[in-house]
Length: 90
Image (cartoon, rainbow, N blue to C red):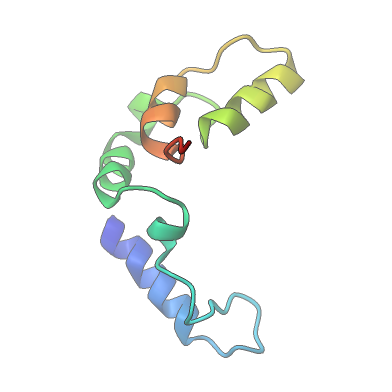
């Protein structure tokens, strides 16, 4: 599945710059930009439905949406922290 993401990223770079969806050649690959380890992305694609039941994304975003919705918890928040949240830098 990470090959698919790379293919989509590559395809977006080949589109004409004046068209919607074009990806600037100067941008790093998509998983680098999202700060997601390719191994984690592959694992999540293979196990997505068993790991997440509702909200998915960076943990801070999921917590924010939970707060807005009045939810106390989201199934899969630990996996959001582990696999989809940028590393904390000091």
